[in-house]
Each structure stands twice: as structure tokens, then as C-alpha cells.
Length: 277
Ligand code: C2E
Ligand code: CA
Ligand code: CA
Image (cartoon, rainbow, N blue to C red; front, side, top):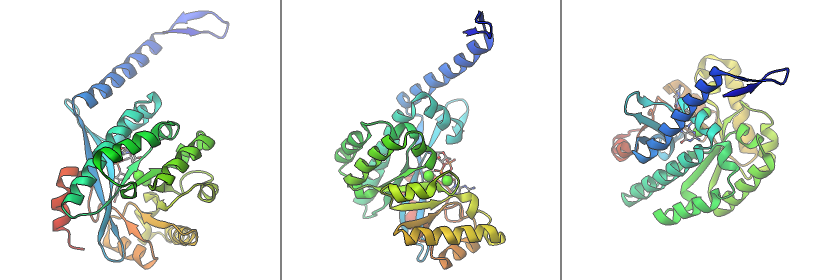
């Protein structure tokens, strides 16, 4: 709560005190949330666009806050990243996702689960080992997982991120570049990293049937991905028209509110059984 002035003098700054108190209590709350089981795994189905067959899900975390209700990730993921708490959360999401995958397989439903990783996860040299432990504990194959990374997560420390990603990929897990097209140097990463999937950001997809510019970007991205031997996925499909357009352009898979919003993991079996493409 002390701050150095331009002239070198140290003064007390009540603002700093307040800010660190707020973040301290949020960090404590996040830690308690793990203990008290307040996080919820939601999943959004991902389908083959040509057939409508459900081939996977994306894991998306929610915080069932005792006072504030359902808190969305945008409100706490950035803070979790800043403080390093994200490593604990990622571990929790991987664990829950593996359990769900195993449970579904026991019911004859074989899905690939996609999990989002953050910068801090990629800098964690223990991640491949921890992940291997989770897979072994739940008896799930690495081939049942896809890890989504953003370009900004890689940019923080490209050399270390690449090492972690290469180790993960060597285990047999798929890697996906998330939010493709919104960051920097995407093409350089496509060339260097062992990527299997490219995920077109929803900002290009949401309104593409009315926007010729978006359509051109999406078409070129699909061609780029295919030319590099990658699976191309679109997120943010909110209408049948967009689904049809993407399918006509040859986009492999997609997810979006038109098919389903993210749903609680324990509702997935019923949802799939009721799904008519
Ligand atoms: P993302 O990885 O790009 O995830 C896709 C987001 O788009 C999700 O928001 C999803 O609910 C939303 N979405 C899906 N379909 C549609 C659609 O048709 N229309 C629109 N408008 N939106 C759609 P959500 O669940 O709020 O997550 C926001 C972001 O928070 C994620 O973006 C991801 O970056 C982060 N996040 C969520 N869960 C996790 C997690 O477990 N770990 C990490 N590191 N980040 C997470
Ligand atoms: Ca994602
Ligand atoms: Ca996205």
C-alpha cells in the first residue's frame, strides 16, 4: 500500500490498498470455490456439418456463486490467468472432462472433448505429466482429447509454449488453434506447431450469411486449413442458414446456439439421445 513518487518519496496510497484487497478476496473466493464445489462443467456439442452427427463437445466452465448466481468465465478467467489460479482450474476442468468422457463411453457414446488452455498452462512444464496422470486415472485415451490454445497464449513465451505443445501432441492429444484470425502471426504458428484443428472465430461466423466480407474470410480460412491438412471447425453458428453455408463451403465441424447452448455435463446423454440432425 506504499507507492514511490516521481521524486523518489514513498507515499501511502489508499487506492492500491483497496485494489489489492479486492483481488485478494477474489482469489480467496476462487480457492474456496474449488473446495466448496462451486464450479460447474458445461459442455457445448460439436457436430459434423455434413451429417449433423455429434462428434465432440467443448468444455466451458461456469461458477455457481452462492450469492452472485451463475458467473460466466469472462468474469473470472482473466483474473485467474493473472494470478496463476488458472492452473488449478484447468486441472479441475481436465479432470471433470475425463470423467465425463469415460462416463459417456460406458454408455456407448464416443466423443472427443475439447478443453481450453491458457498462457499459464502452456508455461507449466508439469502440464503433460499432470495430464497423463488424469488420463490414466480415468482410463481415457489421449485421442479422446483436443486442447484449444489461442495465439496470444502462445505468444507470451513461444519457445516454452512450443515445447509443452510438442510434448502434449506426442502423447496423442489433438491441438486446436482457437479464435483463429483474431490474433497475430497465426500463419507462422500454423507452420511451426503440431496443430490438428483450426477453429474459426465466431466474430466471422455469427453474421456471415449477410456479410460478403465475412464469407470470403471464412471460405479462405477453410481452404487454408484444408491445404495444411487440418480439420476446420466453426464456432458461433446461430442459424440454419449459416450451418448450410458453412457445410457448402466444406467446413468440417461446427458448434453454436442453433444446435445447442452449452449445457450442464450431466445433461449431455439425454441431449444427445434427443438430438435429431
Ligand atoms: P471460447 O473458447 O471462444 O468459447 C466459445 C464461447 O462462445 C463460449 O462462451 C460459448 O458459450 C460461446 N458460444 C458458443 N456458441 C455460440 C453462438 O452460437 N453464439 C454466440 N454468441 N456465442 C456462442 P463462454 O462459455 O462464455 O466462454 C467464454 C470464454 O471463456 C471462452 O471462449 C474461453 O476463452 C473462456 N473459457 C471458458 N471456459 C474455460 C476454461 O475452462 N478454461 C479456460 N482457460 N478458458 C475458458
Ligand atoms: Ca475455445
Ligand atoms: Ca472463440
